Every structure is written in structure tokens, then in C-alpha cells.
Amino acid sequence: NAGVMQNPRHLVRRRGQEARLRCSPMKGHSHVYWYRQLPEEGLKFMVYLQKENIIDESGMPKERFSAEFPKEGPSILRIQQVVRGDSAAYFCASSPVAFRGVRNEQYFGPGTRLTVT
Amino acid sequence: SQQGEEDPQALSIQEGENATMNCSYKTSINNLQWYRQNSGRGLVHLILIRSNEREKHSGRLRVTLDTSKKSSSLLITASRAADTASYFCATDAASYDKVIFGPGTSLSVIP
Image (tube, rainbow over the protein chains, first blue to last red):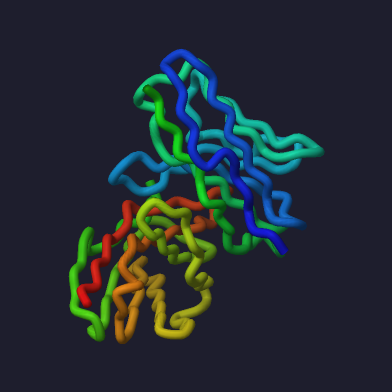
């Protein structure tokens, strides 16, 4: 059973370009979470998605950032018109369906390290 | 905010010693999780303890949870150089649909 896959592992973009980060959850997992980790900081929640639905995007910046988890294919975190401050590691995690309202642990991907030059 | 806060921020010990890290949080939780992150790598899930559990073991790891004090501790016994990493606690709150991470404890185990 393959783990959570993220690609690319490293992404370099110039200011103003678009960045697309992909996340394939573990088989059988229908919940996906995106986190951002700035250098020397802990992880910060960005968005929580289920298939075709955004459940909680309270951690997403209001502009330039968007996320989707289509019925088929990976979850995509999209950053438009990137700026230097977007340079960070972006982690995706997946978890199985909640059982009796108590969610299980999250399984993390290796992360995508975005560098904006 | 119900963010977990780890203590200490950084810890340096000799190989073979025990390492204890603490985590405090603010609101009621469903469970609390500990993760490890090696430098430049993704997170690895270590252990999950549910709100109705008080102690859990996994190999050299021992996690305790005190819901009355809203705190948890992670004990790594007989530490090894390979345990050098950042350790994060994450709380899964009863009223939220997301997991909140603390800033982490950076552990250095000196051979």
C-alpha cells in the first residue's frame, strides 16, 4: 500500500508565476489536508478537503491560493502569482473516513519544497 | 486558539539518555498525536492517544495524556543519534475538523 504521494518534491518558481502542488492520498483515504511549514516554524493548517468538497479552508490565504480534490485524480494546491513569502514546504496528509465522529491519524506525504526566486 | 505548544523548544542530550518533551493545549480534544520530522523530510506519525486513554507505549516511546491539565508528554528512552529530529504534537479538537500542530521541539542526540 503506497503512502501519500506528493509531487513535485522540489519546485522553483519566479515571482509572478503559478505553482501547482499535487497530492495523491493513500488508497482508501477520502480526506486530504494541506499544511504549510515556513523555515524554522511548525506546521500551519491550510485546508481540509473531501472528494469534491472543501470542508474547512480557514487557514488558506484569501487571495492567490486555492485547493481542490476532484472525484478522480490527486488533490491540487494552486498558488497564483507567487511571491517570495510563499517559499515554504507544503505537506499533504490523508486520513480514512471518520469512525463514529473520531478521526484517525493523518498520514503525511514527503512534502513539496517551493522556492520562489 | 487550541494550538498545541511543545516544551522545551530545543533539547540536547547524550546518546543513551532519556528525552522528555511536553505538549500543552487549550481546548477539549478527541485525540492527540505525536509526529517526528527529520531535517528536510516529511512528517512521520509516531503515536496517537485518544482522550479516554492515559498512557500509550510504542517501542521506546511512551506517551501520557492528562486531560485535566490539558497536557501530554512524549518520552523517548535510551535515545539514539538517529532520534535527532523535530517532534511535533498535534491536537484533534472535538469542535474542529482539523488537526493543529505546535511549533515543535528540536531534539539533538549527541553520540
